[in-house]
Length: 294
Image: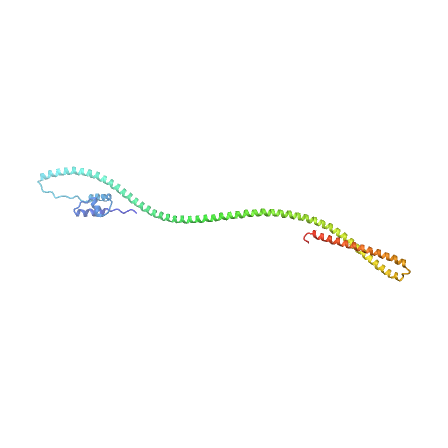
């Protein structure tokens, strides 16, 4: 804020007080008396104070009228000349003083403006210092956030590397599993081919078993027929014994028939036994070649 300058009344009062003390009211004396004030402002007010003061008149001694008149005329002429010169110098001095006063006031205003700028700059400096301190705090917090983000990024990179290793290991396991799957598929295909061959062989063996079973069944039927014949022949032999004497020839023939029948029975039994053994063997082979059994 610009400092308020001294007034004309203050300068006039100080000048009157100095005159009353018998001191010449110079710019320095007035400024010392007031304790403040711009020299240019004091000079401008002193000029106005001097112009406003009535001129002091001294009591003239009484002289003879002609001498007094001549002296008065000469004094008036000299005073007029001196006054004209003084007025001319005064006008020049006042003009220069006015210029100096204006320049001084301009400098004073510039000084006040500069003081205001200094105050504003000081306030701005304090504000900027506070902002700088806050910015330093914000910068420290930002640095901490950056460090946390960097740590998080590093952790993420480690996790990505770990996941990549896991993916590579999984890929290797997948390759191994694919190879194993191919081996299993080949083994399955081979097993399927073996099963088909076994089923074909089982079909052949089943057909042979059925044929042998049929042969065995026919052999058993034949054995049963022969046994019935033997039983009948035995009955006939019993009847023939009663008629031994009468039917010796018939008995001998019956005996021969019985012996032949016995041989046929033995042969039939041997064939049935052999057919049963072949059937058992075929059943074992059939069970061995059938999938999921054994």
